[in-house]
Each structure stands twice: as structure tokens, then as C-alpha cells.
Length: 308
Image 1 (spheres, rainbow, N blue to C red):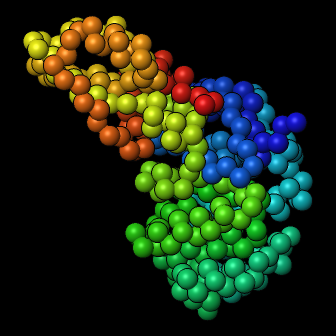
Image 2: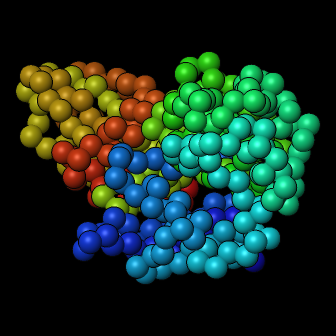
């Protein structure tokens, strides 16, 4: 039995004749914190809109909590929390009125947890939403979403507008939610250090495709960067597959490779390098290497970093 909280099958989406999603397949299991990454225009927000039934696919299907996204019943929507980029709320409402409205229409409401969030963020209840800073609107939006005790929390750039301290507070609160049994989070952010802090599985979008889909720790093991020094000039080709990036300068070569293994190590050793040193890579480093539009050959290698 498939118990995926999020399921995407062969998702294709065209806008004005341009393909923005090209055959996306993805499953997110219960309790997983999934970080979905991509450069601007990669299709992350389009995926979220289709998942929530706010847009429709050209082809394919998406499911949330077992129901088709195109016709989510109210009961399913009540089990989903969402914070969208921009933190749009009714501008002329005071904060306390927004809170009452959300509380009245929610199937569940954890008032103690919500009060804890309001105190943590120091949100003024008597001010209108339009008079709040972007950071405060973001904090209010996060608090409202978290108070509904969602089984699934979808966060689309949720820390947009937050300063460093507020971002750290949010991540700590997200960790608190994660610890509650069964919670699932789909987390999109341009701040990759935030994603690296809480996500356990990573998806990377590039050119309309999901080119990476695997656990974060597995991704770090399977994409490596090497600084290689040769006795004389660098060889024109190492005959190694799945090279993501290769740069040479004199006798030095810097090589980023997907799915490094003993066979590739043996091939490299036939060139008798003087030295070979691994360069540590953060999630941000890996993301930049995998999505650089100048290096289109990357996709042939990185597409294999899936379903680990």
C-alpha cells in the first residue's frame, strides 16, 4: 500500500508553449522533511500550486494525503498548512481579527502552541496587517499555519523577509513541529543553509526536471569535488563518466563527479596524479554545481542521483 503524503506522477506543465515541468515523478513519505530546491523559474512554486489545486497540470497527476489535488475535499485541506512566498494576508484587518477568522474556520487549533508562537515573535495584536513589516507578516503567517496542527506543512520560501534572528527562531520552531509524530514538511527556500539545517531528503529542479532526489547525507557522499595535481600537463580526458564540472589550470584539475566509486578511482589512478585531495562541499556548493546553466552536460550525470 502506497502511504506517500505527497505523490507526483509524470507531471508536465506548459505555459505559453514553454515546458516548465517535464515529467516530474516524486513521492514524499509520512514524517519526511523534504527540501525542494531550484533556481528562480525552475518550477518549484508551480509544483506547489498544482499540488494545492490552485493550478492544473498539462499532463500527469498529483496527490496530497491520498486525494487527487484537482479536487481536494475540505477535510483534506484542513489537514494541510501552507505558507506561501509573499505572506499575503487581508491588509486592512487587525492581527487579532485575522487570528479569530483563522481560528473559526480551522478544523483544529492548538491555542497553547499558537500563544507560544505569538509571544516568541512579539506580534502586536492591535495593529493592522498593512502596518506590519514583511518580517512580522511572515511570522504571523507561520504562526497561523503551525497552529492548525497540520499533518502536512508546505512552506514556499517561508523565511522571506526575516532577519537572521527571526529565521533561526523559525527553524527551531520547525524542528519542534518535526518532532511531533507523523508531521511531513515540504520546504522550498533560496537560503540553502536553512534547508540543510532541517531537511532529510533533497530534490533539485533544473531545466524542468527533478535531477536529484535522495537523502541529504547520501547526496553529500555521492557528489564529490577533487583537486588533482598531475606531474605534467592535465590530460584532455579522464574517461570518467558523470562529470558534473571540470576546470583545469596548468597541472591542476578541479573535478566534480556524481556517484564516485572504486572503478572511477581506479581510472583516475591510471593517470598517476601527484596528489588528489577531496574538497568539502556544503549543500549550497552541490546545488550550484548541479544547476549551473552554463554546464548543461551536468544533467546526464546528476539524473542518476535518485531514489537512494
